Image (cartoon, rainbow, N blue to C red):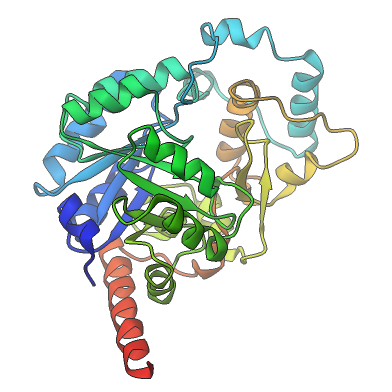
Length: 364
């Protein structure tokens, strides 16, 4: 199973795997895919530098990528402390009351110091790019469409490809016009930030919109070789997968989150703005349900919503309660029924895709 994407990225299989874990990313790249590290959790550029140094040394010379969260137009923003003043007191009261009602304990001093994710801020995302350019990624992807024109130009000057996620065909055309090299057509089923059109409809629309010269990766609802084969049949040159790697051995997480993921079905997710301020698909649980109650406030825009709930997310994750852990995940979570090494998962994906394509060829 090879496509033109493999030549362009220098990989064996047309599988791009997104993960916030450098261990997962390295394992995907070593197994013949392209691992992409989510950078949003790195508040300190030095921590990201250390993670990318580790990747440089543990991918066996194989390529990897990085993923940032950067609006194409720089917003007016101050430091996090300044933005905190824009958060209404009623929102803070609701979060605290909800945590109390859910039985979530406060953080210790050390945990409180580490709480919060600033990677949603444009300035921090720019710092992530600057750090990445001192290492050897093959790809920079942006979760919020194309990065600003100067960032795209800077990446190209360093020989990097630029990818951007798109939830509509017109967005994809705009991405390409702005200089993006690869388009990730991410359907409604996907975890994290996602649009309103399902993958079966979206992928061929995006493929037709951008033409033959720009490879399209299909994302959303892909967790098996049969689904990879379907994506290729829709015109994609490869797939972008994120949620499936949450169920791997290399993804180091809490017992509570592991339990929540393993027992969730494909209907146990919800698309909501409560995580970051933009629509994102999450595990449905008592925390997400609380935000749908009549007395709940409307989520704030990005990045204010994330600043509002950042410490709450840490408290929820540290609580050890699988019924409240906050986690972006796609509808494919229903297929995550066992914890297995990345290499085994990727080998099974490739084998099933090859078998499916062969079977379809014989059928036709």
